[in-house]
Length: 122
View 1 (cartoon, rainbow, N blue to C red):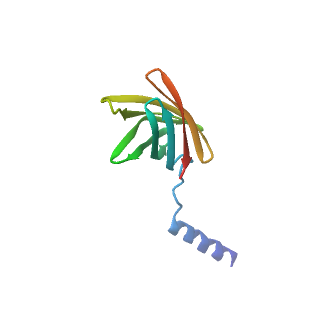
View 2 (tube, rainbow, N blue to C red):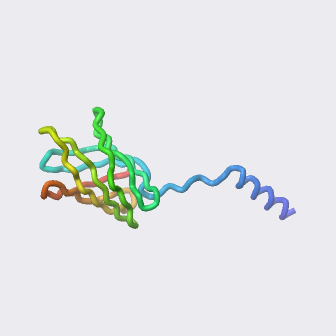
């Protein structure tokens, strides 16, 4: 009887499959940064694939910044974003942060200036 029960349970588990595990960083985040260029707020989508981080910043109004050169090393993330400037041209931010539960805190560097930023999980 026990063998039949265990066999039936194993068949049910095999039939339903396992859900794909999400990395702790995967998901949607609220981003905030105060810089000399002004306040930046965005909804950020992050996705881990091994040690590679991908995603995008949605600033609303059709403005989207793609994450480039994203990397994950334990709870530490690094990436770049190309920001458009009101005065024209772009500016590349080098971003680094540390994941702690449902928050990420870090710093952005561009043009000789470094400012702090935060993200919280939506």
